[in-house]
Length: 242
Image (cartoon, rainbow, N blue to C red; front, side, top):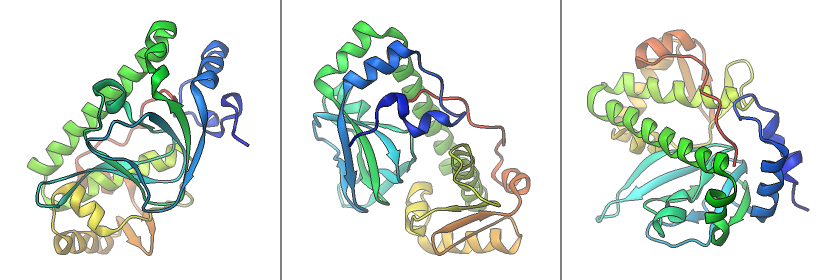
């Protein structure tokens, strides 16, 4: 049985904005079901014209692009509450791919009804614009990390951003959180070699700032890690939940 939008477990988190009853009713008609996928499953493929849009109900994933020679550039990590497929909804095809890292449950929406969001629910349409703007802002931060921060600052910046999202989703206990990605994924995201990334993580561990081992990320000193990453540690902004 699928979860009704009014009973969505994500709505209890302060990171997500409140929806009116009319908006909840509309999202319920927009939702066509739920999908459970296993680790490694492709959700959306670059260049594809997916008929479906998704909201991540649970689980973690990756957004990435492939270069012509087959190398992978990780764009960012996917968390519960993220909306997937907006590019295909607007541009008719995906500009990047999305893959499940863990077992994921996804709310599924029919893209053929996508235009109704704009014609019938202007506030929901604004929410989609907000989400696109936030993605643009994050890519700007990523470009700074790639081009202007050294490896230690880049890795620290990424770990702070991850920890902030995890904390907002109540997925952190005593500074520790499940982070089942590979070091190669982080290296790809930051334009670093695997060896360089490994050595940088070791330096952060030696400085007792953060430890990433066996799928668990533990932040020992958030303030110190943020100083190294040249990043503010205020709570993430309240975001729409589609």
